[in-house]
Length: 94
Image (cartoon, rainbow, N blue to C red):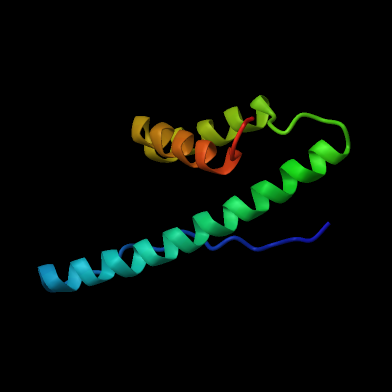
């Protein structure tokens, strides 16, 4: 098993203008999209491995753990984000 270090949360930078803030948000959004894309691919690989072993593509207990973590960190809106990410990463269920 390979260990991957996860980036730690960093405090938000201080901005000096609306334009500066918007640029920072745009940069963060680029990073978020890249991370979601990477998560999507890893999820696809896990589902394929699980299916190849005869297991289900989706493990609801694992999804509940993910939702709980997002909720604990961000509250009710974290649940919405987690559900959106999980739905995206499940791929087609048919």
